[in-house]
Every structure is written in C-alpha cells, then in structure tokens.
Image 1 (tube, rainbow, N blue to C red):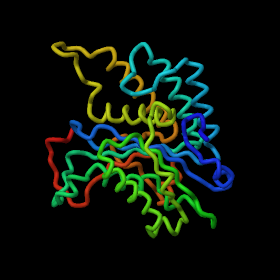
Image 2: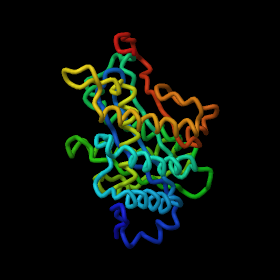
Image 3: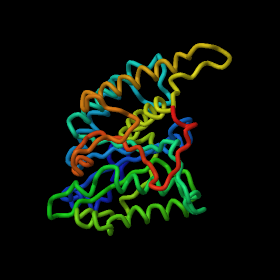
Length: 294
C-alpha cells in the first residue's frame, strides 16, 4: 500500500499504525563546503495526526500553481518567483500553526575542530547527521504520555556506499536505547528508516527550498556576480527575494530571528516546542580561524 507521497505502508500494519502515535521526519543536507558556513542539515517533522492535512495543503497549492516537476531551490528564477513565494506561504502557514516543525543545522567554518581521528574525518557526514537527528528536534522532551511514540525517518538519498548507509541506519535505530529516548518512550523500527526520492515527496521539496535559502544567505551567495561582469544575475536576485520572504515569515513567528546563531531556548522543552529553530553546531574542542569570519 502506498500513499500520495510514495510512502509505503504494509497492509498488515495499517490498523496498528493508525492507532500508534508517530512523528514523520524528512531529512536532507546541502553544502558540505561553503565560504563561511558548511555541513548544512535540515529536517521537517510532522505528527501523524497532522500528516494528511499537511500533505493535502501542500499538494493543493502545487496543483493550483501547476507545479508538475520537482520544487527545488536550484530551480528558483525570476519567472517562477511568485509561484515559489505562494508555495512557501502555504508551507509557513503550517509552520506557524505548529503543524510542521523545521530544524536547520550548520557549522561555522571559523570554529575548527581539533584532535579529530581519521575515522572522525572520514565519517564526518554521518556523525553530524546522527547528532542532528538525536538533538535538533528536542525529541527527548516530546512525549509525556505512557504509550510509546514511534519515529519514521525519510532521508533524501544518502551519497555513500551501501555498507556505510546501512551502518548509519543501525546507529539511527540504536537511538531508542539512549537514556533520553527511553525516558521519553520513543521507538524506532528498522523498517521505518528509509531513503527516498525527493521527486515523490513534496514535504522534502519544501525543506530543500528553506535549506537552500539559508545556505545561500549565510555564504553570501546573494552577492555573486555574473562571470566577467559587475552585476548580479536575475536568478540570484530572484533567490534573494525568496530568501527575504522566507525570513519575513520566520520573523512573524519569532521577531528578530537571527539565521546565523543558535535559536534561543528559555527552557529545554523549547527545543521541542518551537516550530522553527536553527543550530549553529560548534565542536567542543576547537580553535578559531578568523579568516572564515564574515
């Protein structure tokens, strides 16, 4: 059995899933390297009780605007700017209503990790992804009920060998034995950790646009000039306008929001309660390279 976004559900477990409380999390990554910021990771979380409404709302606006192809940050242009703004408005209406939670993590290159082993360097991509899933949404503070809460995780296709991807998924599954996950009664089933094609998941496409906008602005790509010229291209100008619109929508939720720093949390529960947060990941053991500061 398959829903409108290509999410596979075994017929024998449909009734059980309908009774179980679930969070569905779509994950993506971008810009491993950047002028000032790198290692961008993003996630969108939707409660199972809100899933149908979220998918229908996004699907409806995409059909209205005749979006048949994949929606991506890289496809933003002056000709499609108004359509992208309308799609983002529907998406951020869902964020403002806390039907959708967004988390963005990145690393500021000026803070350089020290004393890393060869394995740390080799597996950086998956280590940071693991930390993002474990901490970014504040899942440890998300379940105050006695019954278990299940996570379903959908990763945009992971760019590595099958063996490494399988090891990574085992580590994600093992999160359920961490003390904070056990205390919150959070469960992760092996079959619920899946790689997906973003062309079949509109929610993942929404994340791509938001994540791309943050990479764009934090790495000063809005200042990029056309080759051999002293002016910016129309596509760059359109992307800057879309970024500014997304920032405006975020600041309607959190006035004065600063995209380059950790989102403040008055209480630990805010890491879960907030509908939109940024995490500027900084290694505990680091040195400062001032050449990477803006």
